[in-house]
Every structure is written in C-alpha cells, then in structure tokens.
Amino acid sequence: MFAPKSRKVPRMSDLLNYTLHVALVSFMLGSLVDVGLKLEIREAWAALHDKRFVISSVLAAFIVGPLLALFIARALALPEPYALGLLLLGLTPCAPFLPLLSDVAKGDPAYTAAFIVIAALGTIVVMPIAVPFVAPDLHAGAGVVVRPLLLLVLAPFASGIAVRSLSKRWADRSDPIIRKLVAVNIVILLVVAVLQNWQEMLSAVGTWAIAAQFIYYIALAACSYALSFGLRYDKRSVVTLGVSTRNVGAALAPLSAVPDADPRSSTMCILAACITLLVGFAVARLVGRLAPAPRLEINRG
Image (cartoon, rainbow, N blue to C red):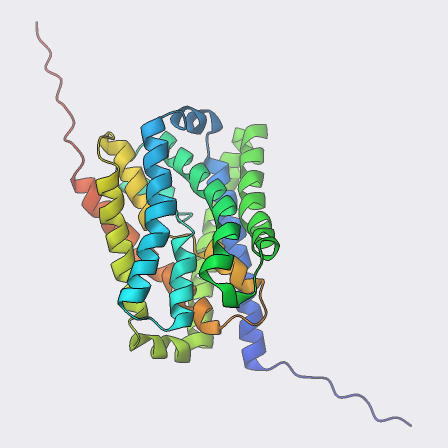
C-alpha cells in the first residue's frame, strides 16, 4: 500500500501574497471601470479641444512629473528600489478618485473627464518607452510593460465607457455598487499590504522613502498650478489635482509582470495608495479656497 500524499498547507505569507494580488487587481479594475461609468464622452471630447488645457496637462503630467521624481530621488539619495518605485509613480499621473477631489475643489466635470482620458492614454504610450530607460535592471521590455497596462488600465476604463454609452441608466445604477467594492478593496489592500510588508515599511522610515513621496506630491501640486497659469480656475484645479495624484495600480503593473522585481519597489508604490489620498484631499481643500466667490446678481426694477 502506498502512504497517502501529504497535502501542502499554504503558509501565511503565501496567503497574504495571494490576497494582496487579488485586492490590487480588483482595486485597479474596479476603480477604472468606475471612472469609465461616470465619463461623459461628449463633454470630454469638447474639453480636449481646449489647446491650452491639453498642453498644460501633458507638460505637467509627462514632463514635469517624471523629471521631478528623478530630481527628488537623487537629491534625497533614495536607495535604488525606493527610487525605482518613485520613478514609476512619476510616470503614472491621475488617481482614479480624481472626480471626487475635483468636486471638493469645484473643478469642471468635463475637464476632469478630459484629464482622465489624457492621463490614461498618455500612461499607456509613455510608460513602455520610459521604463527600459529609467529601470534598465528591471528587465522589462516595452511588451512586458504594455501588456498589463492594456489589461489593467485601458480594458476596464474602456469597459466602463462602453457600458455608459450603451445605457446611462445601467451605468448610474452600477456606479454606487462599484464604488463600494472599490472602497472595500482599498481597505483590504492597505491592511494586507501592512501585514505582509511591515518590515519593509519600517525599514523605509529611515531612508526618506515616505518623506520623498510627501515632498513629491506637494511639489507636483505647486508646479502644475504654476504651469497652468492663464487657465480658468475650474480648469486649473483639475490639472493641479490630476498631476499631483498618482495611479498606484498603473505604477505597480510593470513590477507585477517581472518576477525578480525588488519587493521594496512595490512597497514604495503601495505606500503611495495612502499618501496620495491624504495629500490629494489636502490639496483639493486648499485649492478649493482659491475658488473665486460666486457673483451676486442684483435684480433692478
């Protein structure tokens, strides 16, 4: 008789790793589907014809953003894995919760939709080209980088847009459900990330990794606000908030596609999920105070 085969009991670390990947993918898919469900194509298309807005958005998001990340990483002498994480974040502007921040800052919804389109398409175009240059040791060619971006960024974004174009009623009904699922995934993602990476997070405290992110997002807000001079307030606030927040899921996409990626780079990106949210709301509140007071109409006669 043969002895029964012993079943391999999964370790806690394996379970946490699996849960983290599921929560991360669910967060990316859900948040971008949610954005697509709320996106008005006609309004976004009209806003995309505003040349000054488009030029300000592209320059701030894909020129200033990566260069500022590179400057801060070198100025603070960040260890290479944390510097890589910051550089990847520098290539992925616009957090999926931008519409919420835009509402707080009294931004224009049509221009918010337009910025989301610019950021999504720009990330898919720029990131595969830039990653081999900023991270040659990552061994991630353009094909390796673009594949998860198409699957985890463009596909869910386009799916949400498709649902809204087919039926606004179903899109409006689905949006609250998707939003709640995304909120649950954020909580799970942060809790599991802390449980799995608490040692790396503690080690990041003494390396300027956390401080670098706060400095980076605040500097991005200041630079993008200055660069978008001449725009009306409700457009300028959209550029500022879109550039100063990061799409964490898109930054993690190339790392998830490379098996030998340093976990500290992923830790840097996961930390951004909380930090970009905190800084984003603070910037939205501050920019909201700069909104011009509504004019009072005086009835005569």
